[in-house]
Image (cartoon, rainbow, N blue to C red; front, side):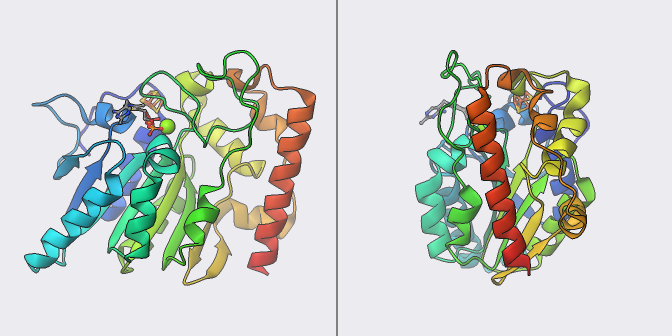
Length: 285
Ligand SMILES: Cc1ncc(C[n+]2csc(CCOP(=O)(O)OP(=O)(O)O)c2C)c(N)n1
Ligand code: SF4
Ligand SMILES: [Mg+2]
């Protein structure tokens, strides 16, 4: 990644992207759909990324990756890693069909979902990754009433050789996951929680603080699953060993998007976070 890009100040995606490209060092081809990431890359003829990148249509990220892999195989260029990077809208919603198909065909590529929990590029519309209780421009009065879709669980059901959950606030953990994923063959799925100051409504200087709190509260859990074996990683591993998670209110109260959340929603969300945490503890045991 070159110095300078067109993301907003304090963008969690831009941090995560820098780390993951550093970890992927070597022959890599990217494919990315319409999203904040296309904006981050810049307008032709300028670009902030010094490696080849295909700009594909919104639903076709994993399909375009499948095409790239087939082409490279035909050329006998198995030394090149194909990496698809899409937002939560491009993964959980419009991209899920192509992604599931590519995973079932065991396509040899890494799919990265950076999760900023809404359609940010077009002005913060709700996605199925938006958490319950969040204000978006399409849930402007009552907040989002439904739970966040558990995409990690859906991808885990594909029995992938490697799946991981990371955060832009924990660079080394994120970096190590990409180094590990690069060495494995088949479909690898890595989901990165990427805080977004304008969409989540907090000052740009707090991006790392918000990201850390998401992990401290268990809203985001750092883990990896390799050939079916679940492991907590980094800070989540320590939290699992010490049993000292913070209540989610510590994370929610710092973000304007949750200012209209009801007490019932808060209770429901805390319950969901606790249930999922206990599920992970059982898997790790
Ligand atoms: C088929 C199609 N529908 C809608 C759009 C408009 N569009 C471009 S980017 C975007 C939002 C993408 O959201 P997400 O995937 O979460 O990435 P983010 O913008 O949050 O980084 C939308 C709706 C499009 N480009 N193509
Ligand atoms: S809207 Fe959010 S995700 Fe998009 S560039 Fe700005 S900070 Fe990054
Ligand atoms: Mg998004």
